[in-house]
Length: 636
Image (cartoon, rainbow, N blue to C red):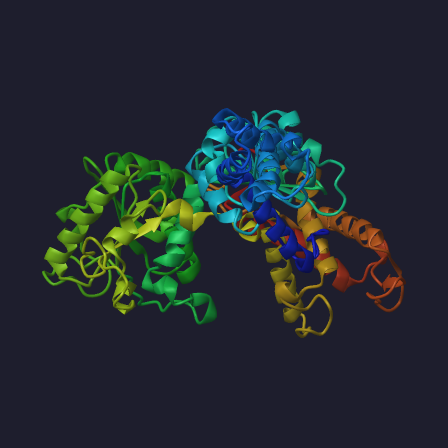
């Protein structure tokens, strides 16, 4: 979460004692029955010994039934045996105090068992600044396993207690049993005071229903917006849903975005196993040279992760080389590779920047034909007809098939090009044990006492990537589309001001985003939240970008019509922040002044150009998210 939107969270000085008390309470809750059993056995044994010694001293009253009966009455604090007072054996003295304690522990265990779910719901309903996760399954489990280590997490699912039974309940997790689509169930999870809500049900419509209910429950929030992330089953739906969301003015107390684990997994995989050109961090240096000859890449299996990986490679390569750069060779294997790639090309303009070849294979395996494809640039492989792939990403849905394809691919590239030329990355759902079973290249640097891997990893040629463990939890700053737009807007503003002759750090707004004051960050967020108002004012709509689309640009007449609307929005936003008209800009204190707090007609040419620049760059900012603007009054 970005600075300035933190809310009133518990101070770290008080958080540690509260966490310690919570862990102690959970330990007692989970071990009450064991404590009761131990105390009961010890107290009853000592009671038998003490009662035997007391009654054995008086043969007229001694009998074994008396010994057992009076030892048992110690648990209900019956004082009949002690009515004559006096001195008693030490074992009996200990037992008469220990037995009532054991009884109290047993009662506490029974009460906690009866009221545990009700108390858990009470704690969830009263929680603040927590994370609500709706649904069940591997994605939910991965989220909870990571988030519950440092955050309070409330799981809302009809099978929440079966998914996380009492014996396996993580320290930071609370459960609410019920259908998360129902507003009353979400209210029991404290959604109105939560930080983030994840909708992770299997179908997209249910996750949208969760978002709608969460927005209604958070309608009265004033401190910070509730962030809601809805999981989408089909990757192609994400740009459509984002276009429909951005087309509306953003709610002040609610942020909504959409995610697919496959897209997040593709980002995480390229961060963990990047091609050499991507690992070089081209943003820190000059553009790629014109004669660049990239090593080929291969993707086995066009599952959701495989498709997302191909698209992400295309987008990053396009950003790296520019529109006139060389093509990146990417070979794809899948039972329906040709048909799926044709559908992707029609929908994704970025694929025009890679040399994409499809191979229809029975199981998405690597074939010799894929390795004999000549490179377009640079030297060929050892036999003159191909070059070794730098990475082979194995992405079938079935993990057994992925492991088989990965091991076969490693053997094939090693036989053809030799060991060490290619790396095969096998994607799995969760961490499980494959990485430990096969080991990793860094295993050689471990101490001699470290257990050796069970199986050999072909000298580091095979690596494993656990998609959900690596992709989750979601980086909210990266997935919040409005936040990304706000950062892009500020970056373009700084670039435009530098072109006008301004210097960095010359005023509060002329700094990078990380150094920008909170009120100016909010101003950028407010600006991108007004995109929907601008689109409606000119009869425009957002749609996902397609391969045949041309770059949209506002006409000069449209810019002159929309720039005054942007200035009016800026006036409303600055007025709400307490600014008034003044000859000299004053950003601190209670008397805030700004010379641009005037109508459009009285605005200077420089300030008018700033508003025009906002309108002019809006299509480029939207295009970064795969969205395009269309005119509703013109045929497409």
